[in-house]
Image 1: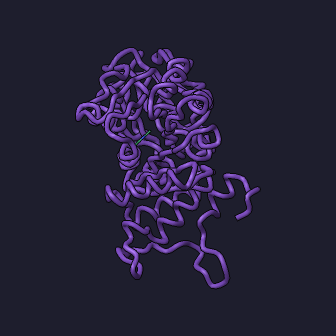
Image 2: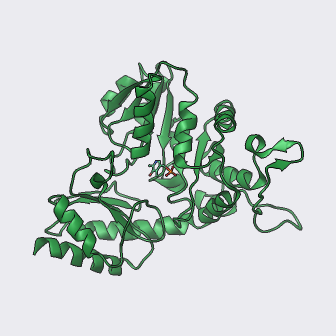
Length: 350
Ligand SMILES: *Cc1c(COP(=O)(O)O)cnc(C)c1O
């Protein structure tokens, strides 16, 4: 690996076997033991290739897990009982649930802060043991000031700064370079990219933290499947073109959504493939979803297919504005996407 290669190039080549006679791709290695090594502890060549590739993109040492949520559990496992954490008021449902559970069980003190309230995050850096950031947030697409929070943490008692980078992808944002200690991904989403796997990955800024996360995986047992790790790496190879194309389409849809009479607000961080927009109420949003023909009315995100969902309809997401629709833009022709969206939105206004 040449350190001067761009992220786009490294997404294609990092973790590939090299040398004469090597296969072009790492094989799927379905093995619980490799000689005297047990794979839950030591990993497999398939996991290692994926970890090398994502680690290279994020600039740290990566550990693959069974799912994105398993990375949240592994990070929580780093904290002694009674630790205090700060989390965003709005973030991925499952992450909020994990912190709420730890709080209910008396393991952690949890402070909740508005994602964009940088001053409150900076002040929390002086008190908390861990700050959990997610930026852009799921589903409201708030952007957090990662460098400001990391700077504040660096000059105080050095709480761990963890960033969920799922929405930005490793190509859109590298939080370790901004001063974060750990990045987590749900590779189920953009990295896998085809809605056909569950996988999570942590990337630590140093080997000590990476070792502790690997120990948490060994203890917790949330290891990735051999096929899933292979599929995630295969997905990563095309992340550059997928994410660039989907982001272009998203920007075009944002422009048009902003001028549609049924849309009261568009939430878009300026780049990326995720967009959220608000209609007047839940009924309008449900009506629009029911009228879509091309865009899948389905949960999850980050796939080649465009999906839309009214998050407030889901358990645990009652705080999300009732008429908010989260759109994950895929790889269909954006003109077809707009035709579908506009006919559905027209049905709301007329
Ligand atoms: C989906 C998601 C997760 C959870 O990942 P799973 O792979 O579903 O366990 C975590 N964070 C964000 C931002 C997500 O969108």
